[in-house]
Image 1 (cartoon, rainbow, N blue to C red):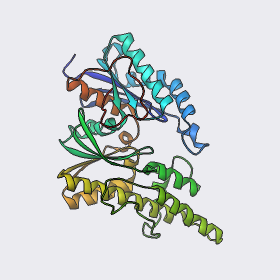
Image 2 (cartoon, rainbow, N blue to C red; image 1 turned 45 degrees about the horizontal axis):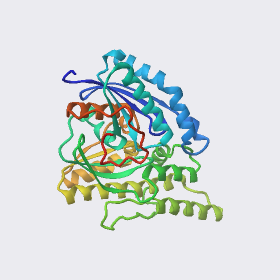
Image 3 (cartoon, one colour; image 1 turned 180 degrees about the horizontal axis):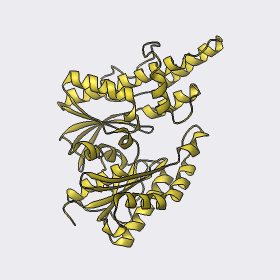
Image 4 (cartoon, rainbow, N blue to C red; image 1 turned 45 degrees about the vertical axis):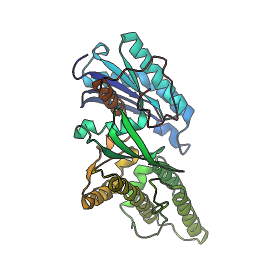
Length: 343
């Protein structure tokens, strides 16, 4: 295999069919087919709808990625696929497709961890990760704090959400405010017109001494506040609610992330996942990291959301580390722990 192998990555853990092509730390293609519009009328992701959308999008998205990269199937040195965590049916579509491609071409296959892939994708933009670094992953399904001595072989969970993930809270609050789905981007936009100090929403587990998160109480507090306004016949200041809610979320996220860095003597923080595209989170994290002497790395927004490039990036890292590929009977594990970087 070449010194910098050409790796094709497939991501189908939720509602986006992502196919990326990477050579070493160089991104050659990042093709995405999203089914978010099909889920919008339900106010959230419907697993069966997502699985069927992956089936329909897989072939065309792979073809689009190969064309964008300017390579043929026969040029690919290895395949990588998200094996977990994620929606079981959606994962199965990607894993089955990757097995078929790898078997038909006689190429190695790496089943990888979705969360570790979110960490690894930053290397496509900012180069090799510092060892160690702290990674905070925030999305619709995850709010995690990780210690990462080696993204290819040693990732440790230090904290996670005990109820709603941050992105899930954004979606639910957006629904309360009548802003539609997905909630993250629209709340980010609305918040720019509001006052983040207008309403003192609670900060769950802010000073509890742990690295865990809780956003369910915050979501409920927003809903009760809005309901009280509506019962009183008063107009709901949507922009102020959005800004105050968003500030509560990013305040807790950044405070916990900096605590992990300080407690573990780590001076590099990486933020990934869909919520990492939030403009206020990026700004507050930069401000607090600078004050604390911590170097901050955040990929560009397109690489923060689920994508095939991140899977290919981790696959490339595993190949470079000389790790054995997965067996062709590898399963799709919807609850794959972060400690299992590959299956």
